[in-house]
Image 1: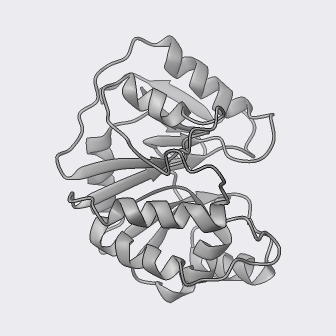
Image 2: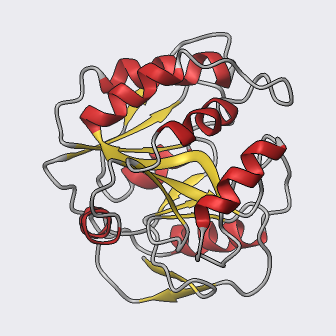
Length: 243
């Protein structure tokens, strides 16, 4: 599938239907279209590893399923981990995976509500061209969560001339150089959760973001990631294309 986000012109590789709510019209539309098409094998670059977090809860596994149907392996972090708190467990198991990954690049997507929809070869090309000089790119969101004013102000200022709605860090999908991602998540483990959302690892990422103004970027143009959980309207177009 070749998906275009009409609002931005981006062609994301991952669509993320995030948020603790059931009304996700765009995400449902993309999922239904994706699963109605015959799968076309996706080329996996030799220098890329895909990972996700899944401890076996029955609500998880969508991302792995959409990857598997096009022949893409995903390394699962946190299998069998009974208790799970995102702010505690997610950085730990991600760092553990990063410590053994040997490819130059790592792509992460949440297991419960992410879809693999685009070309992985194209994703690396976009990383190198649109985010030249950066080490790690997170998806951008229209919602600032946790709702901490200093996060909102910093990320609005960071967006600068990018005047679109997608201005806030979302930790549900990211792509980066593995060596830097290891160092970054080592630092994540040293950060305290924010009181406004003590269970959320996203607060940890947002606290750390100002420490890496040159290395970490947000995907304002949905070129890699489309966080559509709080977005409504006729926002996507489906185009012919190969993976």
